[in-house]
Image (cartoon, rainbow, N blue to C red; front, side, top):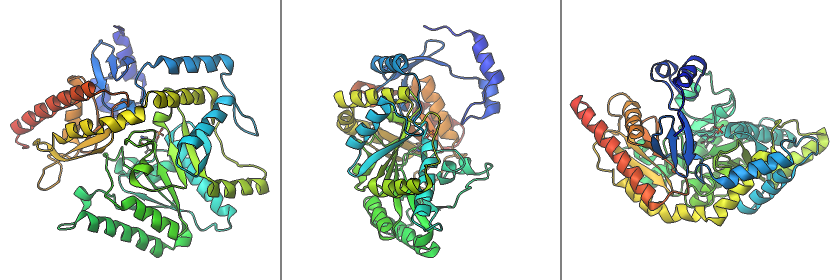
Length: 459
Ligand code: PMP
């Protein structure tokens, strides 16, 4: 047990600002200080054990404290702790990782550009797409299409693509030209009496009409997560993605698959676009790329995108974009070893094998009094807490999901409440026994909050 002095707790309250946290509530309740992790479990400063039901932030594929990733980082720190990639400089791990990504990502995505985070990666995508359309002599083709409830990051540009109110309201976003289309969530946004197929057709019609109304010559790209993550784990209806891809192709609009959560086996297929049957021009990956042991994201582009950009850099003399740590050798070495582990242990296969047990475990809560809808695919899932008849939140929006996440934490399960949804996304190394424990602890939390809600007259 790693005893942390109380002063650390007090120091955090006194000096830190936490992301995605109510600062005043934090001053009152203080931090949960995690001191170590082992496999799918983490331990806090009091020695309490938790199953990490969200793999950190949807990202620790190989589990915590994997010695091979530590060894890869140390070996690279010894060999070459840092070098940059500007002005023709290169390092071996970045070269090898780009090669590996070209090999394992879908056909056509042959080139990688590295950044430190998913947000920076999506900023880079915006800039690449703008650069490309300037290169092709169509400077008016700059707008992005995204979806409400999509999540693409929080910087000024990537946060503009995100379609969630907390990321826009009071941050004066969106700040780039972007149109947010209807979220492909049939249960929530399907009209009265509409079938799922009719819903899909309506969304595709909305896409086409939006393009025609704004002018295809003004629209540069469509970005989406194959299965939406941080907006509440939303799986698209049948036929949605192939339809989107066809409309984008028809109007010469680039298709960007944001696979920051979906990539590297999360959905039981190597990449999310493969699960839903489309091929993007640009793919964004991060998180499970290094199991988040090091910050790293990779943008993969096809030859059409690369060649347009490359030709323009030849005219201009440079590509005026890049980060000090683009292609950081330690991050790339950890990424390479992480992908090797995923391959050797067949963790993508593990996700596919455990999908039925995990999804059945989730769906066992379908009749729970707090649960409106159960969603998920592969090893990602969510329970939307809502009134089954009205599909509206029970009480104040978000409040019950936050209480369930807190009760789960007390019961030894870390999950995440996103708006009214309780989300799960365990490490890819999870076993059937771990899955049973996850649902036992989640079930206890749901029952406890349901009993409280009943006593308060909410149910
Ligand atoms: N895209 C998606 C789909 C994400 O889920 C996230 C992070 N949750 C991001 C982009 C942003 O990544 P980061 O937090 O590394 O900036």
